[in-house]
Image (cartoon, rainbow, N blue to C red; front, side, top):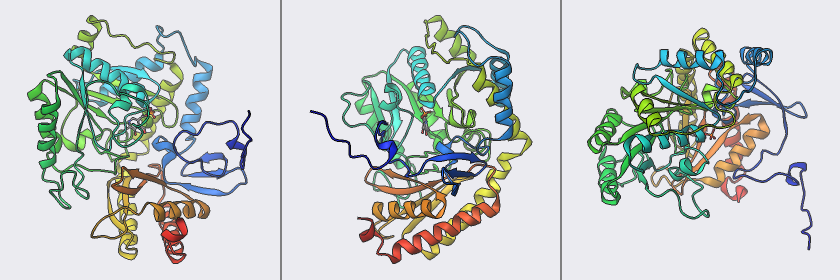
Length: 440
Ligand SMILES: Cc1ncc(COP(=O)(O)O)c(C=O)c1O
């Protein structure tokens, strides 16, 4: 018996829903910080697409790089290399500390983490991998096994040996110990738990230096040094996943530069391709040689493809030429000031925190209990879209409801002012309409 179609919109008919509601309009064009729907309505993009368009949408240099690749080669046999790939590996080695000198170029962040986990396992001979509560590392099985923010339920066992550490969230202390300033107790409790659960085969800790989907969590001073010491003590590798944080969003080429700790393995994705699918897994010469010796295998259809590498070279050029690191810090201050102004005005905003152009805003039912106000947050987010501002609302388990605000690094100050004004209007209107009641 066939099920009748309950179609309201054209996209309800033949597309699989993948875990986030579709925005109820089709987007036809994107430039800089702006996108336009198919009816020509202009929308400010405060999510940089899916956190990838750090240079702004369709940057002319990216378009030019795509044209150049069309004149050269788009895709090749996986064992063939091309000039853009070799030059990109050299450019990254030049930007990174000497120890991180060997790159593998893949397509997505999940894939880069998958390769990182395989390299860590092969190199250490162990298999246990520790992720962070609230972390997001991708949708492939290995990466998903150390995602602790959402999406674990219903698929059976995750990878054996997947363990978790509590994220150092000062606003919602995971061990109910601190309030507003993390003193690192959660890390000590976390490693006690890891040791208790480990079968003696600890391979790596994987972490975002500033956890993004998990609530824009900036760790306290000295935190990553302590993590590195814990790793070294146990013979574990530290993997930093800089999908969102590398190349300017936090005002440096790499976020780990802020924290003074070099990872053993670095993964890059989203921001490396500036909107095209490209990722990289980067290790030391010694680790590469050891893993090669042990038979490391990870060819994919699009490994070392020339097109995205050509685009990444343009991304690196534009970052330097347009001084986007400095710009992210300056515009980030402006954005944070606007958000704090809204916090003073609207009780629903419990906390504003972040770094550079990665800002998080907690939406609470009351500032004392800090209980998340999911329904009103959703209603305001929808109103923002109607008013011409695209915002990403993320839920961190049952703990928090947050906007993760991350416009392209090319955002202009008047666009930040416009975004803050729209947000102000949306919050005011939704709360006046009865807020939560209206949302439910
Ligand atoms: C920190 C982080 N790592 C990895 C990924 C996965 O990247 P992809 O979706 O390209 O597989 C994401 C995606 O949001 C991410 O935020």
